[in-house]
Image 1 (cartoon, helix red, strand yellow):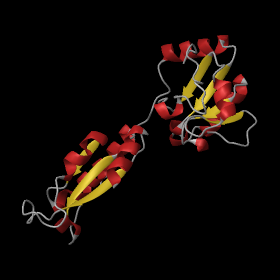
Image 2 (cartoon, one colour; image 1 turned 90 degrees about the horizontal axis):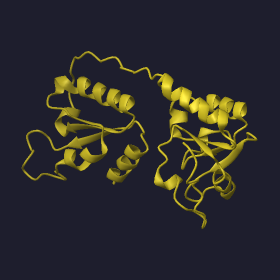
Image 3 (tube, helix red, strand yellow; image 1 turned 120 degrees about the vertical axis):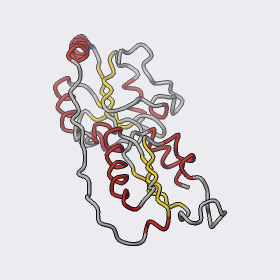
Length: 216
């Protein structure tokens, strides 16, 4: 049941670690209870798969799964034979490795600033990446600076405060008609922390609202 959930996390760039218990090492290949090859099931939707081959490597693989999930912003799989869930070991717990993310290249930032300076009706799409980066306040400051209305990307209503006067609701499936009508008039779309997936850009409520000629 969790395969589709992990697939959704993959497309949403959500850092998730799924722990999958496997048949015990002495019973692999004997057709025991619910035995199956679990790694191939998840390989299409994971950034990394760790299969614990020895209890002494439990901490190593666990730490790597969490590090890769955070650095690549997606799900990873930690596959553990059932008999490794029991017993005691002595090991060194690896410290979390976190990457610093830069603000972007000077050239592209200057191009974005020029687009906004010449925009007649810019609209901001605030997505899940804004939340992950603790950037909601920065998004709000940008919107206020530009006087630009803000819509949320699909399923990320927490990416901009609904109490703010520039908030216009979420896009996509069962989203805000007002937000969709508004973004259809944009000449520049500022996409923050969103991949602009189909659920947030395809027609809804009978409206083909995405601005085809807008610069992004």
